[in-house]
Image (cartoon, rainbow, N blue to C red; front, side, top):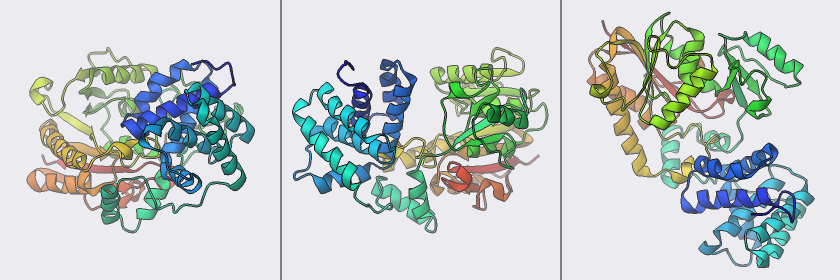
Length: 440
């Protein structure tokens, strides 16, 4: 694909191809971007493609409503790439607020790059109308979440339903986790200020910094040296909720990509940590995450990385119990839609039942690895009760030696057997936490 005809046209064409694959062929945004972005040499172009794709996928029905209102005939199913390109153009004008002339010219030229020269005039006309009139007003409750999932949300969170949908369609802030083993949070914050980067430090959690304007990690001082990592504030609370004793034997049962393992070690390098993941390739990411944070992932005494199904104890466990177990369970990811906006496009109702069975299987198996008097923290990035408090309640009912320990209001809404944070609350993702103590 040549970019000689119009600077920026290649970026728009790539964004349209990614969006077409995600919206119309059921592909993963993350996977499509991983393939597409290396074609762009300039990091600014890569950042633009990502920004366009996220803007469209957070509110695709907003752009669909504009086309429905303005086009005399709806686009056919064969026009998926054209529809995606039009969405690309509309997102540049609103919400990205790019310079209109550059957005229009590059997007029209992208139509030619994509092999649709006869439709360039249509693209130009529709984008000029959007520039002149703005996009039609749409009801923010008119969401691209599937109807069955909206029904679950309304049932689970009737008083928060509208806010969940609205917050899930807005860009999140960028949260950083300062590596206290390398640098104090106050010192790192001062370094950001000196570099002209605006950030704020919440009272809790203790390692978090908030950037309202996201930056590439390469622009963050000390990132390559492990002084800081990118991790949502809700995920950072996991280390506090687990709170292993100094030098404890700890299991991170579904560890990839390794951020929570690294955070636990940053808090206490004396921990003896076993990090599991079922996917060998994802375990490599855990290794890289730990190494960047300054921990020797090849240290067989204090740190062990194993590729295994955490529920298949015979495949990996030597029978020595753990003082603390973290089960950040596979889930619907409904709490992080603003970060992974294509999640709700791909979810099926049958997925929730399958995930619930997997979560129960993991809970039952991993409970056997907890030492008497030890703790297990069950966590998900879901906001569905079936995966969260209902899952834990059922586990406690069938497990005689399991006791729920209270967590304070900083972990979100009280669900009696855990706490639930909802998307956007205090700037964080949706997340569930339940701390379980084994009698002993």
